[in-house]
Figure 1 (cartoon, rainbow, N blue to C red):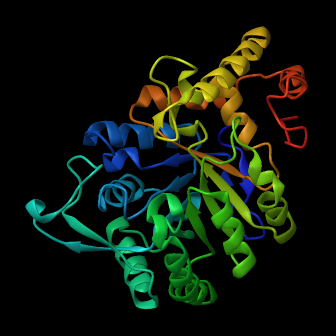
Figure 2 (cartoon, rainbow, N blue to C red; figure 1 turned 120 degrees about the vertical axis):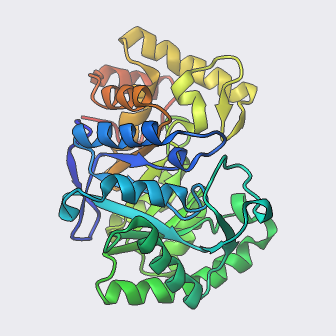
Length: 338
Protein backbone atom coordinates (compact mmCIF):
# COMPACT_ATOMS: atom_id res chain seq x y z
CA UNK A 1 0.00 0.00 0.00
CA UNK A 2 1.23 3.47 -0.83
CA UNK A 3 1.30 6.08 1.96
CA UNK A 4 -0.74 8.40 -0.26
CA UNK A 5 -3.56 5.90 -0.81
CA UNK A 6 -6.92 7.50 -0.02
CA UNK A 7 -9.00 5.61 2.55
CA UNK A 8 -12.65 6.14 3.43
CA UNK A 9 -13.02 7.42 6.99
CA UNK A 10 -15.59 5.01 8.36
CA UNK A 11 -19.20 6.04 7.80
CA UNK A 12 -18.31 9.72 7.33
CA UNK A 13 -18.11 11.47 3.95
CA UNK A 14 -14.39 12.02 4.39
CA UNK A 15 -11.13 10.53 3.18
CA UNK A 16 -7.71 10.29 4.81
CA UNK A 17 -4.42 9.01 3.46
CA UNK A 18 -3.27 5.65 4.80
CA UNK A 19 -0.21 7.38 6.24
CA UNK A 20 -0.84 10.43 8.38
CA UNK A 21 1.46 13.11 9.76
CA UNK A 22 1.49 13.28 13.58
CA UNK A 23 2.56 16.64 14.96
CA UNK A 24 3.48 16.02 18.62
CA UNK A 25 7.22 16.22 17.78
CA UNK A 26 6.85 19.63 16.12
CA UNK A 27 5.30 20.72 19.40
CA UNK A 28 8.76 20.09 20.86
CA UNK A 29 7.98 17.06 22.98
CA UNK A 30 11.04 16.17 25.10
CA UNK A 31 13.37 18.29 22.95
CA UNK A 32 13.19 21.08 20.43
CA UNK A 33 12.60 20.71 16.70
CA UNK A 34 13.68 23.92 14.97
CA UNK A 35 11.43 25.86 12.61
CA UNK A 36 13.31 24.89 9.46
CA UNK A 37 13.14 21.17 10.28
CA UNK A 38 9.45 21.39 11.13
CA UNK A 39 8.68 23.11 7.83
CA UNK A 40 10.84 20.66 5.87
CA UNK A 41 9.00 17.66 7.35
CA UNK A 42 5.61 19.09 6.40
CA UNK A 43 6.84 19.68 2.86
CA UNK A 44 8.39 16.20 2.64
CA UNK A 45 5.08 14.64 3.70
CA UNK A 46 3.11 16.78 1.26
CA UNK A 47 5.38 15.90 -1.67
CA UNK A 48 4.90 12.21 -0.82
CA UNK A 49 1.14 12.63 -1.10
CA UNK A 50 0.35 12.61 2.63
CA UNK A 51 -2.91 14.49 3.11
CA UNK A 52 -3.92 13.72 6.70
CA UNK A 53 -2.51 15.83 9.53
CA UNK A 54 -3.26 15.44 13.24
CA UNK A 55 -2.55 18.02 15.91
CA UNK A 56 -3.78 19.11 19.37
CA UNK A 57 -3.73 22.12 21.70
CA UNK A 58 -1.69 20.03 24.15
CA UNK A 59 1.20 19.49 21.73
CA UNK A 60 3.67 22.16 22.72
CA UNK A 61 1.05 24.32 24.47
CA UNK A 62 -0.34 25.41 21.11
CA UNK A 63 2.96 25.36 19.19
CA UNK A 64 2.01 22.30 17.14
CA UNK A 65 -1.24 23.90 15.97
CA UNK A 66 0.59 27.13 15.11
CA UNK A 67 3.20 25.25 13.07
CA UNK A 68 0.62 23.02 11.40
CA UNK A 69 -1.49 25.96 10.31
CA UNK A 70 1.58 27.88 9.14
CA UNK A 71 2.77 24.96 7.00
CA UNK A 72 -0.64 24.29 5.44
CA UNK A 73 -1.86 27.86 5.07
CA UNK A 74 -1.27 28.14 1.31
CA UNK A 75 -2.48 24.62 0.46
CA UNK A 76 -5.90 24.22 -1.12
CA UNK A 77 -8.10 23.52 1.92
CA UNK A 78 -10.12 20.76 0.26
CA UNK A 79 -6.90 18.88 -0.58
CA UNK A 80 -6.15 17.75 2.98
CA UNK A 81 -7.85 16.41 6.11
CA UNK A 82 -7.08 17.88 9.52
CA UNK A 83 -7.85 16.68 13.04
CA UNK A 84 -7.35 18.40 16.36
CA UNK A 85 -8.68 17.91 19.88
CA UNK A 86 -10.61 19.37 22.80
CA UNK A 87 -10.41 18.83 26.56
CA UNK A 88 -7.80 21.46 27.39
CA UNK A 89 -8.15 25.24 27.29
CA UNK A 90 -5.05 27.35 26.69
CA UNK A 91 -4.67 30.73 28.37
CA UNK A 92 -1.88 33.25 27.61
CA UNK A 93 0.65 33.41 30.45
CA UNK A 94 4.22 34.41 31.30
CA UNK A 95 6.76 31.72 30.52
CA UNK A 96 7.99 31.65 34.12
CA UNK A 97 4.46 30.80 35.26
CA UNK A 98 3.99 27.81 32.94
CA UNK A 99 4.82 24.17 33.73
CA UNK A 100 6.14 22.96 30.37
CA UNK A 101 6.97 19.35 31.29
CA UNK A 102 7.53 17.40 28.97
CA UNK A 103 7.62 20.10 26.25
CA UNK A 104 10.73 22.10 25.34
CA UNK A 105 10.53 25.79 24.33
CA UNK A 106 6.79 25.52 23.82
CA UNK A 107 3.99 28.06 23.31
CA UNK A 108 3.27 30.90 25.73
CA UNK A 109 0.05 29.36 27.05
CA UNK A 110 -1.00 27.76 30.32
CA UNK A 111 -3.00 24.53 29.88
CA UNK A 112 -6.02 23.57 31.96
CA UNK A 113 -8.29 20.57 31.57
CA UNK A 114 -11.85 21.57 30.71
CA UNK A 115 -14.49 19.08 29.55
CA UNK A 116 -17.46 21.43 29.94
CA UNK A 117 -19.72 22.50 27.07
CA UNK A 118 -18.42 26.08 27.13
CA UNK A 119 -14.80 24.96 27.55
CA UNK A 120 -15.13 22.65 24.56
CA UNK A 121 -16.55 25.42 22.39
CA UNK A 122 -13.76 27.78 23.46
CA UNK A 123 -11.11 25.14 22.79
CA UNK A 124 -12.53 24.47 19.33
CA UNK A 125 -12.61 28.15 18.37
CA UNK A 126 -9.16 28.82 19.83
CA UNK A 127 -7.72 25.94 17.79
CA UNK A 128 -9.10 27.41 14.58
CA UNK A 129 -7.47 30.74 15.46
CA UNK A 130 -4.07 29.12 16.10
CA UNK A 131 -4.37 27.01 12.95
CA UNK A 132 -5.43 30.05 10.88
CA UNK A 133 -7.75 27.73 8.98
CA UNK A 134 -11.51 27.95 8.51
CA UNK A 135 -12.23 24.43 9.73
CA UNK A 136 -10.97 21.21 11.16
CA UNK A 137 -12.48 18.03 9.73
CA UNK A 138 -12.18 15.72 12.73
CA UNK A 139 -12.23 16.60 16.43
CA UNK A 140 -11.30 14.21 19.23
CA UNK A 141 -11.95 14.47 22.98
CA UNK A 142 -8.40 14.20 24.33
CA UNK A 143 -6.96 12.16 27.21
CA UNK A 144 -9.97 10.96 29.19
CA UNK A 145 -8.12 7.75 30.01
CA UNK A 146 -6.64 6.29 33.18
CA UNK A 147 -3.12 6.67 31.75
CA UNK A 148 -3.53 10.46 31.83
CA UNK A 149 -6.07 11.09 34.58
CA UNK A 150 -5.40 8.26 37.05
CA UNK A 151 -8.02 7.75 39.75
CA UNK A 152 -10.00 10.74 38.46
CA UNK A 153 -10.71 8.95 35.19
CA UNK A 154 -14.29 7.76 35.87
CA UNK A 155 -15.37 11.27 36.88
CA UNK A 156 -13.51 12.86 33.95
CA UNK A 157 -15.06 10.38 31.52
CA UNK A 158 -18.54 11.23 32.79
CA UNK A 159 -17.85 14.96 32.43
CA UNK A 160 -16.63 14.48 28.86
CA UNK A 161 -19.60 12.30 27.89
CA UNK A 162 -21.77 15.22 29.01
CA UNK A 163 -20.07 18.54 28.21
CA UNK A 164 -17.67 17.63 25.39
CA UNK A 165 -20.13 15.27 23.76
CA UNK A 166 -22.94 17.84 23.67
CA UNK A 167 -20.67 20.53 22.26
CA UNK A 168 -19.12 18.34 19.57
CA UNK A 169 -22.48 16.85 18.65
CA UNK A 170 -23.83 20.37 18.16
CA UNK A 171 -20.81 21.35 16.06
CA UNK A 172 -21.31 18.24 13.93
CA UNK A 173 -25.00 19.02 13.47
CA UNK A 174 -24.08 22.57 12.41
CA UNK A 175 -21.58 21.26 9.86
CA UNK A 176 -18.64 22.91 11.65
CA UNK A 177 -16.87 19.54 11.87
CA UNK A 178 -17.50 16.33 9.95
CA UNK A 179 -16.42 13.67 12.45
CA UNK A 180 -16.20 13.58 16.24
CA UNK A 181 -14.50 11.07 18.47
CA UNK A 182 -12.19 10.26 21.37
CA UNK A 183 -8.37 10.22 21.41
CA UNK A 184 -6.81 8.22 24.26
CA UNK A 185 -4.19 5.64 25.23
CA UNK A 186 -6.56 2.78 26.14
CA UNK A 187 -8.89 0.87 23.84
CA UNK A 188 -11.20 0.05 26.75
CA UNK A 189 -12.02 3.76 27.10
CA UNK A 190 -12.80 3.97 23.38
CA UNK A 191 -15.03 0.92 23.68
CA UNK A 192 -16.94 2.44 26.61
CA UNK A 193 -17.33 5.75 24.76
CA UNK A 194 -18.70 4.04 21.63
CA UNK A 195 -21.21 2.17 23.76
CA UNK A 196 -22.25 5.41 25.47
CA UNK A 197 -22.45 7.90 22.58
CA UNK A 198 -22.76 8.10 18.79
CA UNK A 199 -19.09 8.75 17.96
CA UNK A 200 -17.71 8.60 14.40
CA UNK A 201 -14.09 7.84 15.16
CA UNK A 202 -11.26 7.23 17.60
CA UNK A 203 -7.56 7.99 17.86
CA UNK A 204 -5.83 5.21 19.75
CA UNK A 205 -2.22 5.61 20.84
CA UNK A 206 -0.80 2.11 20.56
CA UNK A 207 -3.00 -0.73 21.84
CA UNK A 208 -3.34 -2.25 18.38
CA UNK A 209 0.14 -3.17 17.24
CA UNK A 210 2.28 -6.20 16.43
CA UNK A 211 2.62 -6.59 20.20
CA UNK A 212 -0.98 -5.90 21.29
CA UNK A 213 -4.20 -7.11 19.72
CA UNK A 214 -6.54 -7.30 22.71
CA UNK A 215 -8.77 -4.63 21.13
CA UNK A 216 -9.93 -7.35 18.72
CA UNK A 217 -11.94 -8.82 21.62
CA UNK A 218 -14.71 -6.23 21.48
CA UNK A 219 -13.76 -2.72 20.48
CA UNK A 220 -12.65 -3.16 16.86
CA UNK A 221 -15.55 -5.49 15.94
CA UNK A 222 -17.99 -2.89 17.36
CA UNK A 223 -16.28 -0.21 15.26
CA UNK A 224 -16.81 -2.31 12.15
CA UNK A 225 -20.47 -2.79 13.09
CA UNK A 226 -21.06 0.92 13.72
CA UNK A 227 -18.89 2.23 10.87
CA UNK A 228 -16.55 4.03 13.30
CA UNK A 229 -13.05 4.75 12.01
CA UNK A 230 -9.97 4.16 14.18
CA UNK A 231 -6.73 6.05 13.62
CA UNK A 232 -3.67 4.47 15.23
CA UNK A 233 -0.83 6.55 16.64
CA UNK A 234 2.08 5.11 18.55
CA UNK A 235 2.11 1.99 16.38
CA UNK A 236 5.74 1.37 17.31
CA UNK A 237 4.68 1.07 20.99
CA UNK A 238 6.73 4.23 21.67
CA UNK A 239 9.92 2.81 20.21
CA UNK A 240 10.69 -0.89 20.38
CA UNK A 241 8.92 -1.81 17.13
CA UNK A 242 11.08 0.77 15.34
CA UNK A 243 14.40 0.12 17.07
CA UNK A 244 14.05 -3.61 17.68
CA UNK A 245 15.09 -5.34 20.89
CA UNK A 246 18.17 -3.19 21.49
CA UNK A 247 19.56 -2.09 24.83
CA UNK A 248 17.42 0.72 26.24
CA UNK A 249 14.48 0.02 23.89
CA UNK A 250 11.31 1.77 24.99
CA UNK A 251 7.88 0.19 25.36
CA UNK A 252 4.97 2.45 26.31
CA UNK A 253 7.36 5.30 27.19
CA UNK A 254 9.40 3.21 29.65
CA UNK A 255 12.25 0.66 29.37
CA UNK A 256 10.88 -2.49 27.75
CA UNK A 257 10.37 -5.36 30.22
CA UNK A 258 12.15 -8.70 29.58
CA UNK A 259 9.06 -10.48 28.23
CA UNK A 260 8.52 -7.75 25.62
CA UNK A 261 12.21 -7.81 24.66
CA UNK A 262 11.99 -11.57 24.13
CA UNK A 263 8.79 -11.34 22.09
CA UNK A 264 10.29 -8.68 19.83
CA UNK A 265 13.42 -10.81 19.37
CA UNK A 266 11.22 -13.67 18.18
CA UNK A 267 9.38 -11.35 15.76
CA UNK A 268 12.74 -10.06 14.51
CA UNK A 269 13.83 -13.63 13.76
CA UNK A 270 10.80 -14.07 11.48
CA UNK A 271 11.54 -10.68 9.91
CA UNK A 272 15.10 -11.75 9.19
CA UNK A 273 13.95 -15.01 7.58
CA UNK A 274 11.72 -13.11 5.16
CA UNK A 275 13.91 -10.00 4.66
CA UNK A 276 11.28 -7.75 6.20
CA UNK A 277 12.27 -4.68 8.27
CA UNK A 278 10.53 -4.81 11.64
CA UNK A 279 9.21 -1.21 11.35
CA UNK A 280 7.72 -2.00 7.93
CA UNK A 281 5.79 -4.90 9.42
CA UNK A 282 4.64 -2.74 12.33
CA UNK A 283 3.35 0.02 10.04
CA UNK A 284 1.64 -2.20 7.50
CA UNK A 285 0.02 -4.51 10.03
CA UNK A 286 -2.00 -1.70 11.59
CA UNK A 287 -3.78 -0.47 8.45
CA UNK A 288 -4.70 -4.00 7.36
CA UNK A 289 -7.65 -3.89 9.76
CA UNK A 290 -10.82 -2.77 7.93
CA UNK A 291 -11.77 -0.31 10.70
CA UNK A 292 -8.36 1.42 10.59
CA UNK A 293 -7.94 3.81 7.64
CA UNK A 294 -4.74 5.55 8.77
CA UNK A 295 -1.57 5.24 10.81
CA UNK A 296 -0.16 8.54 12.07
CA UNK A 297 3.54 8.71 12.82
CA UNK A 298 5.37 11.50 14.57
CA UNK A 299 8.90 12.25 13.35
CA UNK A 300 11.71 14.60 14.36
CA UNK A 301 13.69 14.75 11.11
CA UNK A 302 13.14 14.58 7.38
CA UNK A 303 15.20 11.39 7.37
CA UNK A 304 12.81 9.75 9.81
CA UNK A 305 9.74 10.59 7.78
CA UNK A 306 11.42 9.38 4.58
CA UNK A 307 12.24 6.05 6.27
CA UNK A 308 8.66 5.69 7.51
CA UNK A 309 7.31 6.36 4.04
CA UNK A 310 9.64 3.74 2.55
CA UNK A 311 8.73 1.18 5.21
CA UNK A 312 5.04 1.76 4.53
CA UNK A 313 5.31 0.32 1.03
CA UNK A 314 8.14 -2.20 1.54
CA UNK A 315 7.11 -5.56 -0.04
CA UNK A 316 6.10 -8.14 2.59
CA UNK A 317 5.30 -11.73 1.52
CA UNK A 318 2.12 -13.41 2.78
CA UNK A 319 4.29 -16.17 4.22
CA UNK A 320 5.70 -13.71 6.72
CA UNK A 321 2.30 -13.08 8.31
CA UNK A 322 1.48 -16.79 8.23
CA UNK A 323 4.67 -17.61 10.10
CA UNK A 324 4.00 -14.97 12.75
CA UNK A 325 0.62 -16.62 13.39
CA UNK A 326 1.98 -20.16 13.37
CA UNK A 327 4.64 -19.12 15.89
CA UNK A 328 1.99 -17.63 18.18
CA UNK A 329 3.35 -14.12 17.67
CA UNK A 330 0.18 -12.76 16.10
CA UNK A 331 -3.46 -13.55 16.84
CA UNK A 332 -5.13 -15.83 14.34
CA UNK A 333 -8.04 -13.43 13.97
CA UNK A 334 -5.84 -10.41 13.26
CA UNK A 335 -6.31 -9.14 9.69
CA UNK A 336 -3.05 -8.95 7.73
CA UNK A 337 -2.12 -7.15 4.49
CA UNK A 338 -3.17 -8.94 1.32
